Length: 145
Image 1 (cartoon, helix red, strand yellow):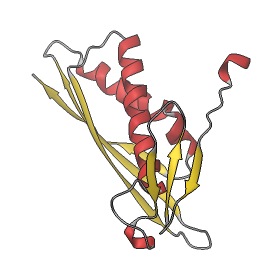
Image 2 (tube, one colour):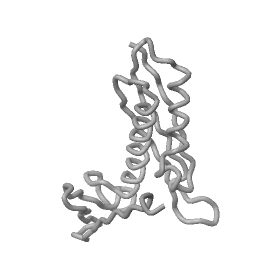
Image 3 (cartoon, helix red, strand yellow):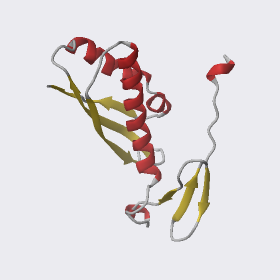
Image 4 (cartoon, one colour):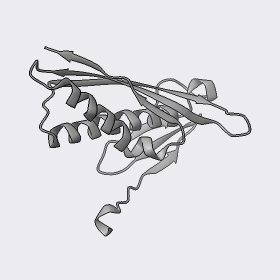
């Protein structure tokens, strides 16, 4: 289906000292570079952080879409994600797993079982997660207030 094919373009320009600038106008530029463990600094977005952040954002947006379409209201959604970069035997470095820990706040009348199914669907349908070789797992904390 032609309507399901989309293209996204970014530009990266080397500046110095293992750093560069990512752009995709009209969005704000992002300073990027190597993390400290690879001769960089901690004050810029590394590819490793960007990869984990992409999973985290995609899971959030996928969850919100499914919840909205399912008519399940949530009061708040705050999530942390941790990615593990390692070198499996015989391969190069890769993100082998990402653990996403959303904290989802809902009203007391929300069907908890339905909410948990929505989280599971978000885990399966996040396109960024589906694009990675590594495992992506969601470990939600559901707050009722």
